[in-house]
Figure 1 (cartoon, rainbow, N blue to C red):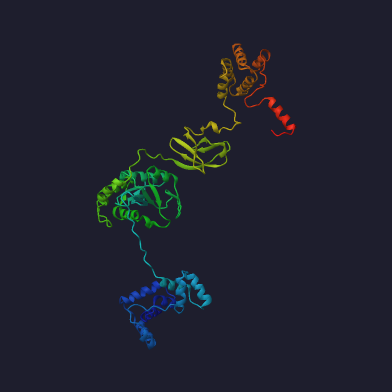
Figure 2: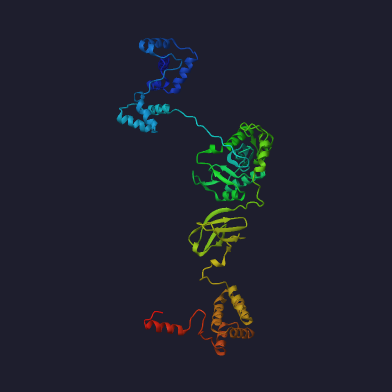
Length: 508
């Protein structure tokens, strides 16, 4: 009770809450509550009145006479007031309160608290209201997109209510908007919502202004933002140019920000839905019945009437739909393949050990060079896990050819060679590969007709043996001699002439 009466007495003297708190050690909220009770006219004990009267008698007359006539409490004089000139000059240079406080302590003998300096500098600078510039666009020139939060909706997986994401696209000229809620967002979802909005407007704007969310912008930057590749391709397919906002500058797309807030406060405030489809049906009906027929506060015209005037200026939609695909990175393994969707696809040998860009569509897969983004390989998607898709140009030279290719190569010589090669394959399977290479060696050393006759004799005799064919040719055929003439090898006389000229020391 004694401390309470002390606070009341100091309040009657005109002390500020901060000064009383520093003097008594009580929280300002406590002092403010007691002051409110005093102002409300609650009964105060006699002891408190006597103490207050005694305190008032002890106040010097000079102080009472000099006190300004004011209804509120007196403000205490700042400890920085003697250094006002220095603080004003330093604050004008843009220095913060911490730097000014350090200089005051080191060079001006300041003994007060840092918070006093911070409050003093804040009062000197004041608050300058931010002036915003309104952007007006030509019909069909620009649209703005953003995400917000929808109304509470029952999640079919958990049975609990939670808020989905609210997508809004607003045309900059007419303020007509497309609204839809989705549970989850991804790059493909973000792109498909754009396409649905373009279809709703029956056309596409020339530019679109968006925030720096990951579905649209991979790396925000003031001068050179990096766009999401799939999003950029989708907009390019529709002839739309993306215009990301500067980082931390959402006011550049104020029209869609206002549209999101208008939807949340007017259409969805206090509502609950049992499914996401129910909320989308409600949004579509509300958009057509109320949002499109309202008189806009800025344009002073009906939104639908302005949209009908803007519709002819929108770009026509493309005749083909955009084909969505997934973009990822893969490393080319040392066997020359990348792994995607549990299958394997070959890449050129020069990319072994390096990362490549992979576009995975529904029916196709493309491999792109990471530096030039040039398509280096394209394959149909594998039909089963573990399947390999191979381009013949990607096979290393030391890779053995398939047995079927060897049989087909030998069969081109004649019917006898074809019959023997096929019989070797039927009887030995994969073990016949070395015998097939032996037949290719005989075709290099003997005339093709002689080899074909020997193979035909072997098969008609019921003998499928390379050794028999080799022995038969050794007794009945003559190996081909080395060629003395060749189109890329000059004759021996040419080398003789060169040697004679060089030994004589004459330059040819």
